[in-house]
Length: 333
View (spheres, rainbow, N blue to C red):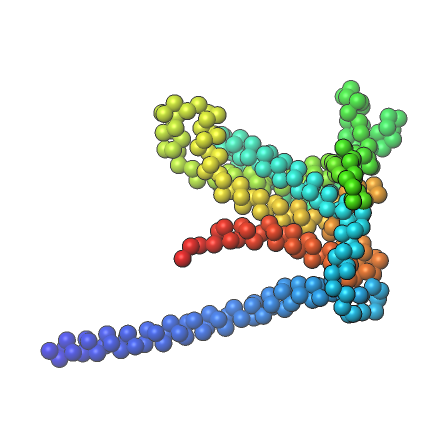
């Protein structure tokens, strides 16, 4: 009886100490993450708030001017033909960049997944992923050399010189110096022509070359996660390879596609270094994007309020892409 009573007392004591231990662990965990939370609050959300406040001020010049002007800076930039061109270029770049990366990445993933030799698979996977090891600055310099047109047809350079040597001179083009916009229509009320600027094509090619390997790795992980039994069951039911791909594999890869769209879309909306390196936003502002425009007017023209307004517009564009994804993936209670 004494042993039973002692055991019950010991169990009750452990039960009383357990909540205290949990409380101490929780406090210790909070203390560990507090410096990070403070840093994020100051250097992320604090600076976002400060940028938003600046965007509604009259700061133009070296000396700060915090006179509140409301949304005047936003109205000013949206009524500027240059910023309208930036938005057009962003839409064109994002659209072709996403389609190119998703299509090429999926094709490369299917090729690697079809490899039965581990050595061949490792070699191809490394080759496809290699561009990701380079910075966008290095990528931009390399592809600028390739797409610098030279003097056509007498003294071509880059890819135009290659076309001349292999008898495909009709494919020569001004590339990054081409200011043509197709179809180049200008609706009433806009100050810019709508269409696809040809000078943006080399930038899209360089960006797809850089990031398609990343998309390939995501799709390859998704393909390896599809059970082999599902594929065999579809084949037994009479599905050919195209039906297997369209009705079985693609639906299974839908979460991968969504994640890739979010990541690549986030990159494309704030693209800066690749454009600066390849074209500098030219010819004229045919390839300029909001990131370049913000840098130009804020740090060269000293129009800090308008630059902050452009930065806030970029933030909203990224948020419109990211927030629905976060809400969609929010775990249900």
